[in-house]
Image 1 (tube, helix red, strand yellow):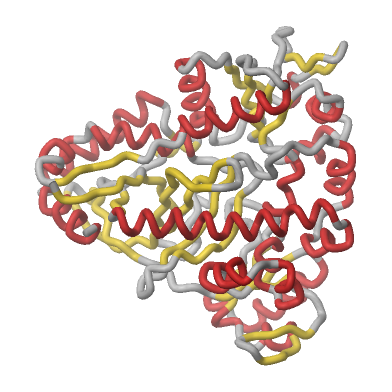
Image 2 (cartoon, one colour):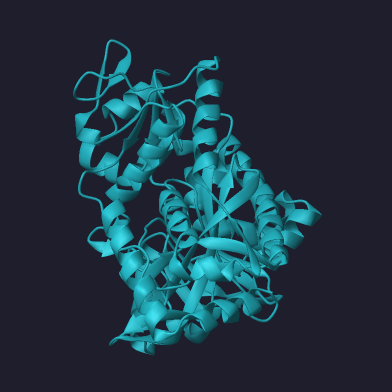
Length: 450
């Protein structure tokens, strides 16, 4: 169904309509500030189309994986010895002990995955459980594509269902506040991150939506926060009840220390922070190693083990040990050194593609050096997975071209239980990441024939 929808959309795009659409999307993104720094977030002329069945498969897979992650996360917080498998830093351990635990480990999360082009099975590459971005961009681009020139003709034959995420995000923040405060009042919300990050435009989209829904919200920085008299305040004295934390904890602690006013306020119970530090173990890429490592299999139910086998690629923390690959016992480092064509190295906690080494794109000497470095710092080694491609239209030298792009899918997950809405990113590079400069974000729609 989605293939037919793609073909129907592409059939509409002659050079004239494509040029009109390109100019319209570019202008609207500029006017509305939908950009990643100075770059437009979306640079192609088609959204992502999913069939109802494909979207249901994605949601079902997310629910299965979230169940296994909850099992691992709860055990990590209850058992310090087991928590070592996630390779947390000392300062993270300190915050876990210092800050009160909320009821949900990851109120907001994003599961980054690729749908296998042969089997149609989603394969998880990481869980973003600390500061999952993209909800605001996705909703803003959804609005633009619903009003884009080709959509007026396309919807004569196709039912197009948008997948908004901001209503879910607002609901999660309110639920977190109600659980924290014990009363169903409306909190004063602050979106907190550095003032020079390229996602400031998304913060504005989120803020404007929250305010429109009756939730007071402002954007501020870590440096502006003050904790005095048992109250967290912004630089102008405004009280802050809830922080939608977009600043990364390791950057906050590195630059401002463990006694930053935000962390003091959370420790004192004077402010609610989403997401809290207690979801950090599941944000680590080693969480996928915990799920797929035979040493931890007994912690999961039979259904959870089946879901892990179906959706999580073989992943291990890089260390000197023996392990199993396809049921065979091997020396991990020796095996990884001789199978670079099917493996990728990733730092345990970084973003934007930083530190990732794709074994099939480097020579043996480079791979060996990367593997040696990985032993000295928390890294994972992960099985290469098949990457799906779709043709996407874009303007080039005044004409529309349809080039294949690698497509990932990242469902947004709420309250640690279910997925609704998703982020889609496309790229001509194997590393599909907008932060790394090689990708584009597009909205996702579920489509069916009228």
